[in-house]
Length: 126
Image (cartoon, rainbow, N blue to C red; front, side, top):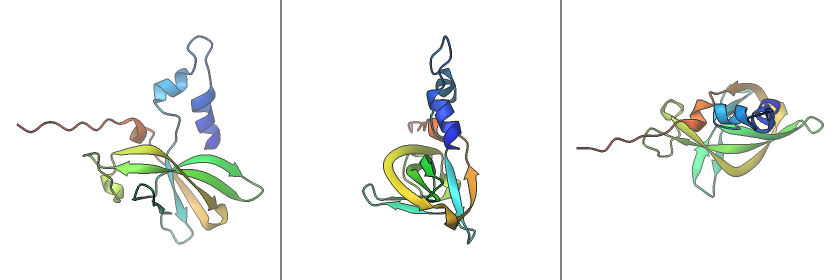
C-alpha cells in the first residue's frame, strides 16, 4: 500500500510531470485496520478532538513489525466530524501520526480515494 502511495506521489511522466497524482487527485490511499477481535482499530486525536478509524500509511518497519500511520479526519455531508462509518462523505489528511503493532492486526480494508477528493457542497436554503 505504501508502494502504491509512493507511485501516486512520485511518478513523473516524460511530458506531464506528476500526472498520475493529478488525475487521481490525491497522494493517499485511505484504509482502516481490523483487529484480531474483528473490530476496526480506532484512534483519538486529542489535539483536534476527533475519533477515527480512517488512516493513511506513512512508513513500515518489517524488522519491528510495526507501521506508522497518520489519522484521516472523517466528515459527514455537512462537513462536520462524524464517528459513524455510514455517514462519512469525505476524509481530510492530518499531521497526527501513530505507530501500530502489526501483530495485533488481522486485516486491512482499502477505501476509495474519492473520499479524499470529494467536494462537500451545501446548497443554500431559500
